[in-house]
Image (cartoon, rainbow, N blue to C red):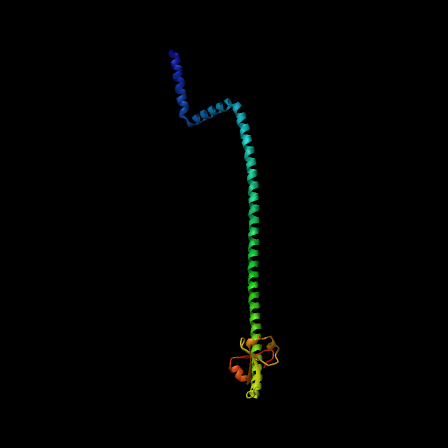
Length: 195
């Protein structure tokens, strides 16, 4: 038994000396790991298959990821193109609205101008009529004449005017006097017969 104890003590001393050097510790750890890896060789085939399967799944997912990135880039470029088209259409709409407003302004100016010309023409015509009427009135101021008065419309007519026959009897009044005196009573001359 002593011999057995001595052997054990010698073995322990040798192991202690062996582990004093760090290189030896590293070698022992590597050897241990190798033994473990060789000991699990049936599982290593399974894990290799699993690793290969996972690698193929990773490659497949990577491919899908690249495909999705490409679709995203394509969608982004279409989005930019659509935004540019929208901006162009908005600018065109704005120009058309401005042209429409300018056209309406021009049209309104033309209408106003036409009204002014018409008013000027009417004013000139009225002035011409007034001057010819004044000339005629000055000639006939003192002359008495018979007129038919419409009491409802306050218009006076020549006796033979076509408007007289259309008048109701209760609106008719015969008047003899000068043209000025009829006008002074608040009556206006008929535009058909121009008395």
